[in-house]
Length: 343
Image 1 (cartoon, helix red, strand yellow):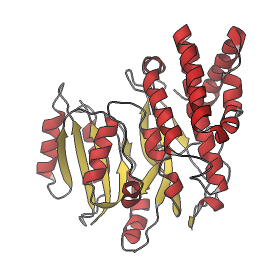
Image 2 (cartoon, one colour; image 1 turned 60 degrees about the vertical axis):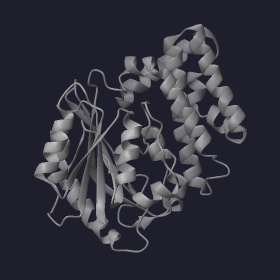
Image 3 (cartoon, rainbow, N blue to C red; image 1 turned 180 degrees about the vertical axis):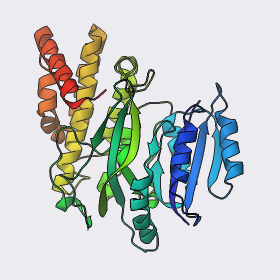
Image 4 (cartoon, rainbow, N blue to C red; image 1 turned 30 degrees about the vertical axis):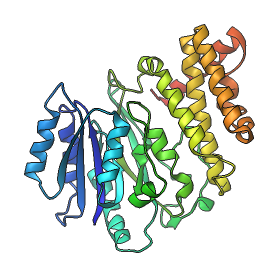
């Protein structure tokens, strides 16, 4: 068994993938316990497939090329998880990269855990927004939330700030935990990373946090899925992912730890807020029906959680009634955008 599998979903990624792969090889100590799966998701517009094969030829015991029909990011993650031989599993998008120094801090811990019968379920570290057009970076850390010198459980965590969430960038899951919860991401859909990081959380018992800047994430590139115009055009996919998350976890029945339940309710509140904001930006009768529809869906499927999520400060401000309420909500969104520098 390998210590860790790094799955790199690639779709027409020839321009970016080398830097991503090289960043992982940089902290490989030659012990043979790192596995890199390049999952070519049916690339057709460049030489991604050829590059994947070349990487395998250069590092046949470490890097493996998997070629599949196009199914989207979630499909590529699913295949990577199915093929993974590592005790731990980490997704790295092909246009992002890992920090060598940070990973040299984390890898000895993962190697020790791989020797244990009961290994830690979830390893967390910081991530960094590399903002393309601004030439700036923003570090998202969790030092106010998690202990930094020991393993812990959800009962030991502090309070997340409104700008703090666990994203795919910040987590390394134990592989068998993901398989035990039957994690399968939707195909041909963006924003599946929300499902990846949210759905397995109730199965997590032991956690370790490293206060190092592990993951570097580009944001602001033209055509990126979190670009504001792109998000409006893909609002139906955002709605689909949010419904999936509502269906996947019953916060009252499935989440026994009080602090975790509160965090997951805040995360789902954030997802509902995103749906509301972008539907109100679109501002058509159809988009308004969709906004009402997603809230009705939450009420129908999770009536016990509805009030807590609907009365979250994020959703109180973004779902005020009428045209004046719509403008106030969007004004608050744009103010928060300037303060927290997202999108």
